[in-house]
Length: 197
Image (tube, rainbow, N blue to C red):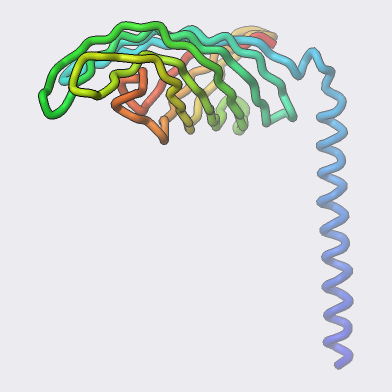
């Protein structure tokens, strides 16, 4: 019985010690993050994208997306972006196999979260809603504008090219890609951008 009580007391003492160390480290990380001035937390930049696909269904797009972001900690950041895309895409209507090529201007907001690891690598998620021209799928070539959502997951690498400038390369996958409505020719999206601190 004495061993059981002694073991129980030892377990409590160890767990309190580990808990205190954990909270002390968490407090230290929070204090270091709070020391970062606001002007170093906010960053600006943007993405520029090009995509071309050929084959059964052709598509091309050019993207320009300025962004503003905020560093919540040394490894975690998020931000907002406005996107503009010029899209040229061919659609095939079933069952008639009529082909219609649409060219349009697409625009809308984006929000992203980024988790950095191993200094230059990061995971990223993005949520977007783009207003774009879509086929009405009524057996004709009629089109209309509609908001098309996208949810991207992926990662990338950042290359510092100066004290306050870096280049990002990102590869992501749109998990809710809709081939009939999306302005993109594929659920895979690659982007390149510049970040100014």
